[in-house]
Length: 498
Image (tube, rainbow, N blue to C red; front, side, top):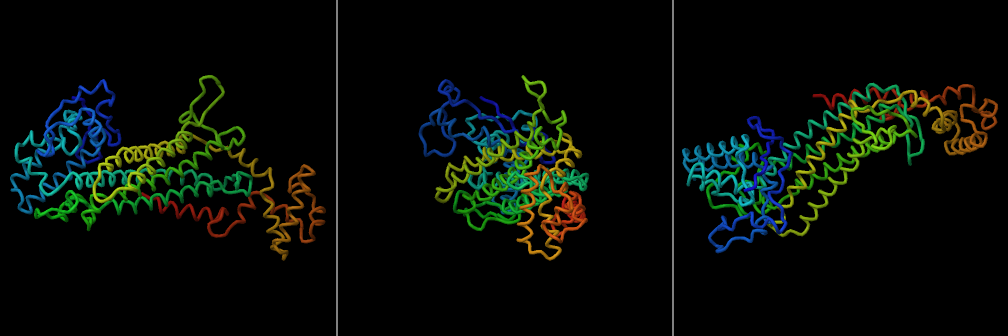
């Protein structure tokens, strides 16, 4: 029998391995391994006379990856067993036997001795079979009033709810790291770009706070997804409910669900919550990837706005001078992986008739991997910002003082003196063209030449052109003016406080 890894999910009493280290598939699907699965009588009913073909047994099994849901399956089964006793379906003594048996399975998993093989088919059968071995026939009563259809839906929601809570912690830490970096660089300036062309100078803190705002939206989206995850399908049974006198609201409350599905068909076939999560995770990855792209550019010799520390960079096996930005490159690359899982699940769902279909077995591996990938990328980018890079203020000062990014401010100067903006825009455009022909910057233009362009220009034009003044002057709400940036920084710190 092939042994599989049993996975923890951050339960206070659980001591097994980290929750997102996914178990491998139990066996290869190659023809040479067909003898590894014995032909045995199917477990589901006496409707079948023969055993599955060994290859189909492996092809059909999800035990290689859905053991990730073991802890949630145990939690849901314990809640279901206690509810059956409260409703008089089984006795209180029987319920306690069932609960004790399930907790034994939990301890075995922690000790690494619960190792179901591919013949168990899935986590639900694996637990039920072991429970019956431990407590006898009373274990056969646990499945009363439920189906694997509502059971797996419950497990998946419990698992994802915990993972969303973990991602919220990581997002908050990532946002706080960005905030600390921004707070240290309110007065540092950086060129702002549109179309990757120099546009206007910015406070570096303002630039970083844009990513803080993206992170704030990411947290909001995940909180909204969590609300829709937190709905219990347990008790919907296979698709139509059950005649067994159960109390769905008791199990929902015991498992921390806020409400129950109102329609049993919807309960067992809904995966909207997983699609929504993958969409939210995709946007998290978009934002990480955008920052990664900027870090990669900033670390290049052409920009040289940052230097990479040895903590988060690697070298070349051939070129000894190289220091490569591997972390942001990997994050940028892994982004497409999460997008792919979203597209895959949408494709699975788009043609499914009600209610449950085996296609839904394909909802898990992509979801598990997307959670793990998003988690790891958040962790890696946080470490990169904390320990992996440092800004080069002198290089940034030189960058903002050696271009025409202050041209708009010249137009604004004229506007403040009664010149219509479109006229001012044309005058400044002509002056920039002249400067380019002469190989000088606007700051190098003598006052006499300014006044030839328009009589409104005076000596104070030179102060208005200074990069620090250009930044400081942008005091519209949400702008890059230093005073506004300090206000925004305080507001964001409050939003990301512990």
